[in-house]
Length: 287
Length: 252
Image (cartoon, rainbow over all chains, first blue to last red; front, side):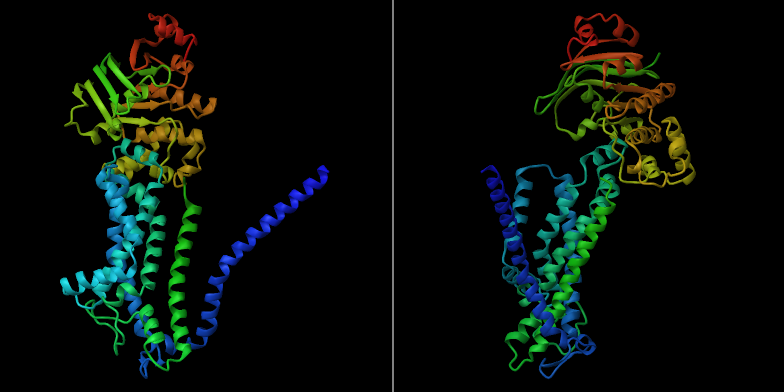
């Protein structure tokens, strides 16, 4: 009787585990399927010409160079504004700000910023940067719009990374005659840097893949040349994908999936870099 | 006998009211080891952290009275706390090595103060390691991460790090609480050497350590200084009943 009970329990245990494993695997299937499908359909389109030539024949032939370059510019532009601002805000919140109503309001604002739909950022950017500040539909306006969207991610990740550095390091540094800023610069920031970097890359990765925020602020339907200044509009991979998938009749499938593949590779490689940075830093960490 | 530090009607209360000091009066003699001992929560560590104003980091409700270091009131809001902390070094209960090399830990304080000359830094590294009885063990691997040292070595590195700043006073808050008896012996021996050049204030981790090391001793109980005097007399024939009970292990 006892023996039979034990066997029953073992079986139930095994069944439970199998079920959980199955569910875990199931969640990965859609992601793998999407990537596999895009690679299958898009890979034949990838060629040196596709990556380095301008589009031709109403975008139905040629390459996607301006979209690749544009997405690169937008990502760099977003980094220029959001990284220093985001890290500075995180340092303030983690190291200087006391727990007051004021800092609580800031924190709530940051959390809520992260939840705003991206198209709303696009409209806001149109009103503030394109029209009010007269930047026009430009890389500058689009980068600033993307920066606002990216800031909450960078601030939250950086603040978390800074807080993870042991409090004892701060106490020791102060006891050795360090000012608070010296302590931050020499000990806290270097230790938090890998975590900050991971957050930065993940934030920028999201910015690189967004369509809505750049729709009204900097993205061009089609440009015959590469942008020459930050005040020029630009083509960009996500928007280009939207255009050639919905707006251009008789568009070859291959070019659509080829573009999607390039975008995915761009974003995933940033993700891989972030993962590498994190795991290398974990291995080297001294606390 | 020179009084290095004069504590004059000093009281302290924290915002949450957990630990406080009431009307403390005694003097700390230069070039001696003064031991602050008593049961936990008596205010010893709090007093220690007032001596280099590390207490500024926590929220203090009331601090009144005076603490004079070489005649200057260090509680004065105009005190240069950076200069004060260079003059009054500290070693903590848990050895906290900074995430730098062994050498980097030792030169940290001097570099913060703007010292860049390599020869000066090298001298400070060697001198402070010798004072902390660690030189022989680490002289060939100064570039290694400090975290690679054993616990006992780390704590002596922390002592050396405090000494590298060339302070005049050294505060030690239970510096041997996590160490084995051999490491503890090394630290205590180093302290006996150091008192010729420094004024040492030690919160010991046991009454035995207090009795072994103290030139002078102050017994703290619930924020009150019960008794202060020479180590020899306070551990053999204390004047106060409460001191005697504690020293003889009847409570605490």
